[in-house]
Length: 186
Image 1 (cartoon, one colour):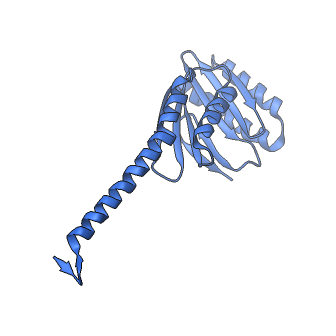
Image 2 (image 1 turned 30 degrees about the horizontal axis):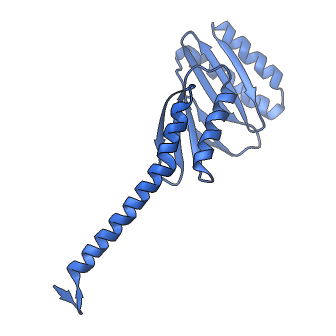
Image 3 (image 1 turned 90 degrees about the vertical axis):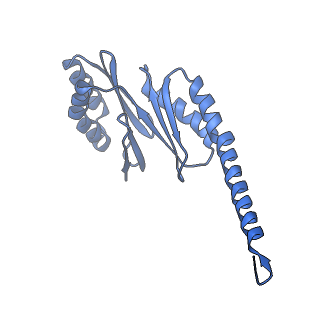
């Protein structure tokens, strides 16, 4: 079959072969530049219980379930640095998962306003004391960490733990909740 001297089956075959080669090249690139290195780095991290990588959009999404850790700030920053080594300049979103229960949800519900108030007013020591006292009142323990970009709240109750990472005031970006929800903050 021809059309103006062009063999249509040959053109279709060339198109299919070209598309297959592009798809194969993309798959190979993703597999060897992101998936394998992330699997190696996250798999070697003893603080990571499980992880899931979603590379189906413009943003490389990584969901990481942390074990019980002593310092959420150090653990998150370690995971973040490892991911950035692999991802380079590509946009990434890291979501931290935890093992929260109703008691931890209740404590966080009653203390999150203190965290946001502290970011507005600067009364960080009051906020930390309030969160620690509130957790202690419900039979849990809490720790609050901060750096120039984020506030890290970790609360433990028996075998369960809650991790919340909140961007500091003036920072624009996503707040990554331990329940896996990312929220845009302006």
